[in-house]
Length: 334
Ligand SMILES: NC(=O)c1ccc[n+]([C@@H]2O[C@H](COP(=O)([O-])OP(=O)(O)OC[C@H]3O[C@@H](n4cnc5c(N)ncnc54)[C@H](O)[C@@H]3O)[C@@H](O)[C@H]2O)c1
Image (cartoon, rainbow, N blue to C red; front, side, top):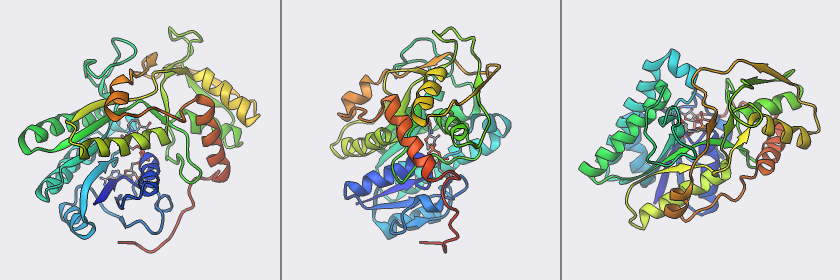
């Protein structure tokens, strides 16, 4: 009955492990720690430090832990890096994922929840975005996720794999114990809070001439706890025999960069200076989910995704860990 969580030492994976444990579900983590943190995995959770593309290792974990389902977060997720190093992204996110899927298939594990992304849509043609919006990614990162979506659909038809592919919009916020610690950090809220912590002079705003009310880009921020809860709900839906699905995970509400900064100024009581720069290529003015399909399928609603709640939770975590997770030199586990 164990849930294999790949990428469980990363941001969203570690919060999902926390919730699975709160729900009394046995969990094992597979993470190569290339971008994650040993300290993000509680010491009593079996942590296998290795690659999802190591078929022998995945087979061993399934046997040793009695794995019956997999939530697959492990991926590289930096858009500019994917443009500079597409081979790395296709190898890590697509080829290794296929190896993982084949190891699960071979062992008869049929339930799979996948971290997909709104980056599979490319340039938005309609807002809010529904699941049937055309998928035309503009980066290797987006394509790597879309290729896996395609593989899942084909594995479902041919091998009876049942999956839920969750296309996240912008994950944000923290729990008391788990937060965002990426290197480099490309996400807006941690970068704003770095300024509030005195670790940077100003926050970069990429473009203030978008066709939006204040000229800055609008994104749909969803609390990481709400994302994690959706994963647990997706497992339950699959266990109930629901068919495979592709679902947007967002709130349906967008906030501009300047709105997010203003809310952070209030909460952190810091002026948070901004530096306005040019737009980044490929950054659309708005990305907002239509979340209705996910809410219906999962019988789930975001509960903590008000902007103030998101920022307050992140602020608490970043004040507790201003330099990120402690660097544990713990002995290799599992
Ligand atoms: N953070 C967001 O806003 C966002 C939005 C859309 C989609 N996603 C997707 O959600 C997932 C999790 O995102 P995150 O922000 O938690 O990222 P993260 O980098 O914090 O976590 C990913 C984890 O996967 C591990 N990993 C990567 N490649 C691996 C491999 N080949 N074998 C084993 N472990 C490997 C890393 O060490 C890391 O711990 C990713 O798949 C990402 O593409 C994230």
